Length: 265
Image (cartoon, one colour):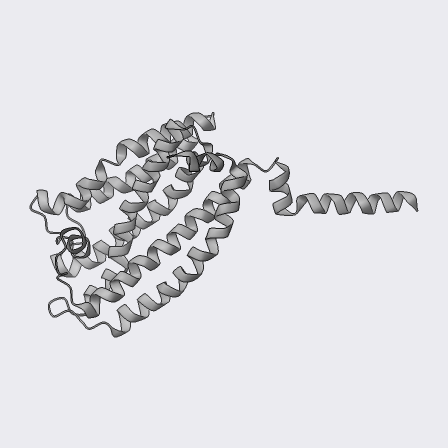
């Protein structure tokens, strides 16, 4: 079942795959970002209660959703790194962590902006907000563990363990609005999908929101793949295939040829 993972234990194979995938994520993602923002900010109708201020939803909801989603992906990579000892999975954790931290920060920042006019305060120690803040600390903790050890593999193992342990925070974030009495509203899109209910948001607002969610996923996935490529090259820079990709091999060959021609003269 897991044999398909084995070829990607080789950094060269993972690098070749990500090189092919990056344009398929980046280009549609950037197009959909423009479409979703223009659609949501300019053409979606104002909310009957919140007026124009609700439009921050087109940034806040996708960032909050994928902050959790990318952490789950990081935890899966941690399991693969520990169980199958695949080094590229360790690099995937390092590639995901900064992107996930950025998404978490954006969700907290936009949530504060949205909460101020709605709740009358920038921040409350609400169950969901607190759990989301813990998620940011978990991302930062994973990044810190990577550089806390002189041995990179030891740091990668410690980061993998934290990524796996910290995944318990994800259901806490999602279900906090159901388990406790919080100011944060309950989920709309995910609740409709998981419970097969009609969404409580108007279609004129729902569709640009769905597009923005997809756009955020594609763009951030492209960023992760780019970071993974850079990490692979940084660690495999002494390999012929990496030198060839960077053009160093050809430059060296040309220099030798020029030097040989000069000696002949």
